[in-house]
Image (cartoon, rainbow, N blue to C red; front, side):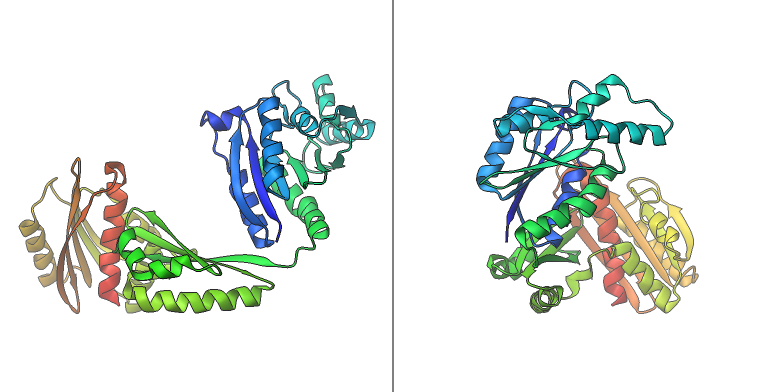
Length: 382
């Protein structure tokens, strides 16, 4: 399988003014085509630095894709950088200028003189017509590999990558394989615990297994390389079965499933209503459930710092009054070094309590608390 690298170009990316979404889209597209991606980088609008980055990437990879820097302004340096990387000059292409002017005419606008810069591409480069924008893309090849330069506007880049670049790469590299990923979601356990359970599986070569921690959730990613999707699915299925056997009830879903969806489906399946007594959350627990269609019969915001005894008493009183089928009491106690949560849950099957602590970043504490409370409900619905 060929190896790829991505270079996202733009000083605005390095300054944090805009978010680089192009790299993620390209990475997923290359993955689905069976192309290994080893590196991705951000480079500012400097032609010398971009040229060095291109040469370094071509020393390591077969395919290098850049995004950005193909506009009409002085600070759009990718064309010049590509020419420098290949030790050549920029060459004017009248047919590209004609394409640019036609594009402007479709929008009832007049191309300005600086747009003519976009008709210059490196000598030896092959233009890729941009049918959804004004910046022509192009690619260049040498003995080391292929350089593809795409515009930075996301919708333009996505269109050109799918419609023009991937068919080109498929022809050059006879792409037939696939890299497929499957994500298992867990809650109620920490990353170190999950690693303790499946650490030996994380050393496997194919499929690979990796962990990604979020506040209140740990994802297990299984990635398989194969000649076909069916073969990849078989590899993934075997590994998922091993993981499920070890991780058990900590798993709440996979891929695009969320904890809110799982809890919602559990309550709806039983036709159970929900009441919530909480402090420290605002409506962060209730709102997503309510939006998903859960019947929230009562929501009570308690005085900040409500103690566990009072919380349990109110849940018990609500249970006796049959306010709802499921009654959650949740108290979040933020701290500088540790955040604590006290949970009380009444269901038709019984009364449950739990205390949990979180030592992560304080700003992530509320999100952890919500996930912890939702997972507490989920586990009692099993």
